[in-house]
Amino acid sequence: MKDQITFKSVNGNGAVNGRHNGKHHNGQDALTNWEEMGELHAGSSAETPLRKDAFMLSDDEKVNIIEEKFREILETLGMDLTDDSLQGTPRRVAKMYVKEIFYGLNPANMPKISVFDNKFKYDEMLVEKEIQVQSFCEHHFLPIVGRAHVGYISNGVVIGLSKINRIVDYFARRPQVQERLTVQIASELKKALQTEDIAVVIDAKHMCVSCRGIQDDHSTTVTAEYSGKFIDRATREEFLRYIRL
Ligand SMILES: [Zn+2]
Image (tube, rainbow, N blue to C red):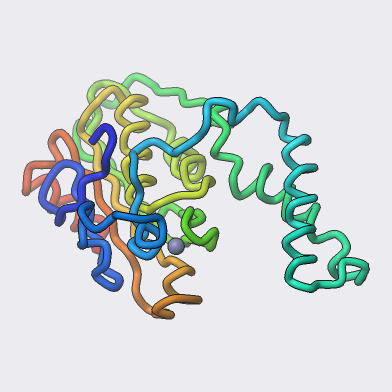
């Protein structure tokens, strides 16, 4: 799992299952060039590919640079930037990129995670479902919108429920690949909760599938990561019953 996301059906740790046009199942052998990778919606690593100097510039410096570049894109498309309606667009988009939809790129924005002793000695599965996912496909920069469902079995510590939402949101707010997002959320929860007994399922709609390319408006993509006790069939089925997917 370290460098490459494995592509296999939902049957164990690291399982990934795409159900939109079946292209997710083609596997790594086919990933020979960038165009193909984009069409397969495949990621090359469980880590977000960031350069070492990713945070040398301040947020404000980034906003200024992106504003200029986005202005060039609009001008290249032939748009008249003196029009009232368009004038503020480059800066608006730049601020949105840096401060909102891609804020999760910066580790400084990682939510503070506090865990508590499991005072109630609740040792059954805890499931938080229907967590909002708003992300962006890194191949097309179009939205991925859906729901995440998370389960864990406490190993002595518990986490504030809203923190699970915050972890999901933080990793979603980057240019993403759904498979990687699933793995990143699971790894962070394993670290925070000090347990391997974690399940994460994401069911999401990709605008790059509905608005362009195949233009399928109905399909969604399901990805799953199960580890620890969730590899056990009965435990996993209990979790899936709760989320009724
Ligand atoms: Zn895409």
